[in-house]
Image (cartoon, rainbow, N blue to C red; front, side, top):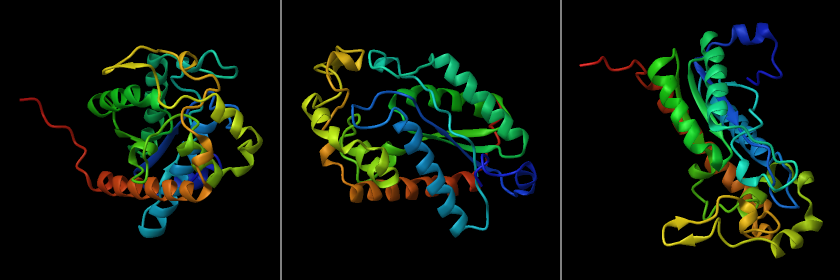
Length: 248
């Protein structure tokens, strides 16, 4: 059930404890892909996961509205990028989760579409689960996709998924521009240390990897892989004893 499309009476009638909270970002993804890429991909994976779960189980899944702005200051030199501090995102997510739990949807997966959010979401899920009336875990779709090779940024992986879910938003006439100004890897590495903090230090177009390599067919595979992983996670969460161990 998509909360943005449901009425309050629809929501009141839902018999489930499961909810998905997509978390994205508004940041550059090269000249060819929209600023909302991470929001769009997180929402698509959450919607597909909920739909498949509801088709195969006698249970609904609540899908909350997508959080559109995340931790993205590393893209600050590219126009249109928006960002908040890690503390801000953690607190906002925690309060949204609390409101979901207040309606009885207290087993929650944060479906994440942005690498910069990963650490903060893991941390806030720990805080929620230890101290609040909810159980929450993070799920980053591109970490779960079995057919994923190197992630990049605005490169073949994200462009492939966009071509599958929103082909009209990919500026195909700018693929060459993105490719010509892209870097091969994220950052400037010396051994295990990344010397760069901002994307503008190593990519001119904002892209990392060749977006031309990401076909719609591969995007469908990625979406299927991520959806399968999310449904498996929902199964585990629905069955899990989420009571907290007592202190010894």
